[in-house]
Length: 261
Image 1 (tube, rainbow, N blue to C red):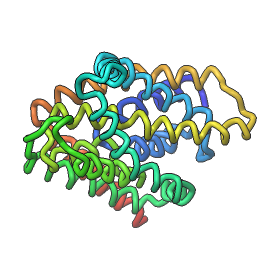
Image 2: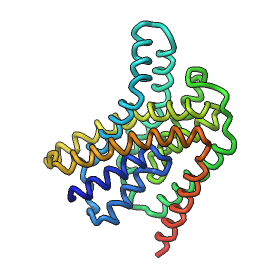
Image 3: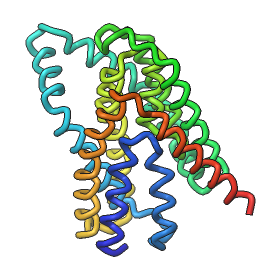
């Protein structure tokens, strides 16, 4: 992989990790279009996911510090946040550990990816149309957090957007827009972070080491991811998810058409 390819794929990872369009599907497509090869570069995957995690940590640093300080002091709603994050992480953690290797094989099934994109499109459309917007994060209760966590678990299927599924499920569960998006992004820290940690031993066993392309790709993912988070907050507040639903529908239709030839 060349530095230019690393930059472009890092940008793709950062944008699609937080925009509701599925980063896994876009990375596979970008790798194919760039001719970067079908072999998995585990070191690059670790680097770009580290970049997106850092983007979440820095963008929501004030909220994260507040949650932690409230937990330590015993005042405020910090423990509620931690409890709901733990509950929301359980479904993806269990599913990921049980069928992790089976999920990786789904990336080669273009028909499945196309169908998953169409599922994302339908979820975004329905959630935009029937958003409840009644409660904040601290008011949502255990069952709503578990429901959102199940949406995150479904996103293990390539083509299903993690941010789109967690946000969409949150809106359908009656969580207010900004609160649902904030919870969805912070929920990515334990899930994506845990998946990245599980990948590190595979990278070390490969004995490939970290290269400058990995550093460049991770940096590009951090910058584009930070921009994407800010963009998503504006999009969600303005009720514009329908445009992403249309985009996913077009992409899913294209992928299904490709699978027929």
